[in-house]
Structure formats: structure tokens, C-alpha cells
Image (tube, rainbow, N blue to C red; front, side, top):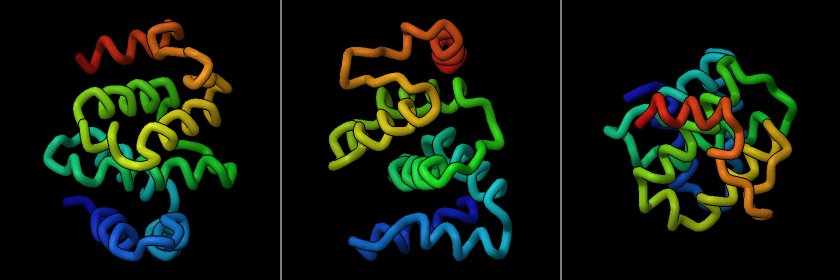
Length: 132
């Protein structure tokens, strides 16, 4: 288990708290780039599928505060859609789709609510093909 797992678990057990606050506590020790890298690594592992929502929320919170990602945004968006395909829990979780859609909007300005699909962006589509 990576080092943000306990942060996600603690946040999920304290409903009403802000994931950014929990992640900031850890970032003060290890830095935001490390946290964002670990959040992405979490999204890459089916062994920790139950942590995917929390990892996406950490990325979302960082983007909303204007932080830069230490990885390619097209790769992240493809990974998030891959996670949605693999995890019924993520798809059906309250706010699960909204967090993913918000990340896409923050990174690309695309709105899935208006019918956008990842296959419509050739770079994201290529990343999706690599994941399958």
C-alpha cells in the first residue's frame, strides 16, 4: 500500500472533512509532487480499487487550487476513464462521475455533461488504447 492510502482512509472515515486538508498535512512532510504521483499510482493498481475515489479527489482538489500535475494530463484522463470502466463502485459512488468530469473540465475544458467522450480527443483516445 502506498503512503497516501492512510490519508484516503482517514478522510473517508471523517465524512464532511476536506481531502485537501488531509493531503496538505502529508504534503508538508513529503511535498505535493510526491502526493500527486502516489495518487496516480493508486489509480493504476486494481489491488487498491477501493482507494480510487479518494485518489481522484486528491487530484481534483490540487487542480482546483491551481497546482500542476507531475504527469501527462491526457494519460490521467484516459486512466480515470479506464478506472470508471473497471470499477462499478467508482461509477455508482455519489460524486464519483462528477469528480472525474470535473478533472476533465479543469484540464481540457471539455464537458462530458454536454456529450463529450474521451474517444473524441485523439491523444486521450490513444492513451485509452494503450490501457486496454
